[in-house]
Length: 309
Image (cartoon, rainbow, N blue to C red; front, side, top):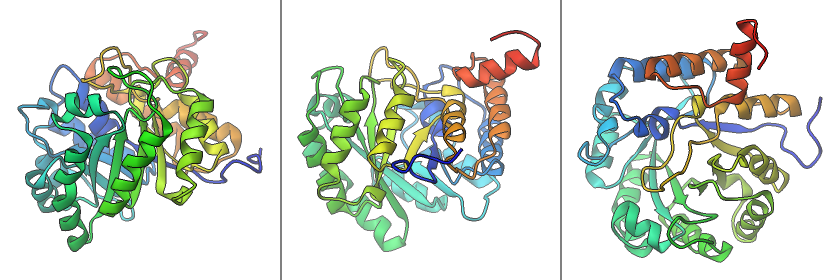
């Protein structure tokens, strides 16, 4: 079927499983597994893969060896390989690893910023100024990520005006794309629409992406609501891997397989091989010893094994 007139004809999926997903695993995921995962995602046609994070292993042990991962992957022409870079040291490592895009980050909640990066929103943006300047000079794409844009575990509700203020600061740094993240998964469709519509009064729709966690089972509905107001870039994590170590009880990102299934049903193009993605989800859940958080992935596996889902 063709997508409704108020929905995009094509959506860009940013696969965050290799970084945002695997960083929350209790056991270290071997370098070769990470490389294999990224290579499989590349082959399946994902246009943007959040591959690694150049943070101190002291803080995020799972991201140790990111330079080795980037050196070992098979890069597919046209694919954007991204890295989280918390400071200039991280940026220098990312530049040496030849990443295509760096990710800088803050929050719409002052309390969350303090808990997550040990400084307030204003200071966090100021810290990234030299990183952004260097990336611009080096011709590297910059993506900004704003946590807790719909709710905070410490402050509670977050007003759209708070999100808009941080977005303006990210734009001033020169971000090419800005993620509006529901870090703890409390957002609902009406709230999603209100926040994005507020942003679109001063910035182009094409500059924004939705990053939704599925804590309350609202992620797919939130993606649909965001598409209705003009968003066409979304983050998802293979097999629903991930969460937030600084937000107690927050479940993982919405599963990539579930998002692709919905978009496929709506007739919206992604350029991604759905069947291959399902197999990748099975691969990484076996490799990590986890249960697949994708409803679609579990249902297909049950069907293949001759069981009802």
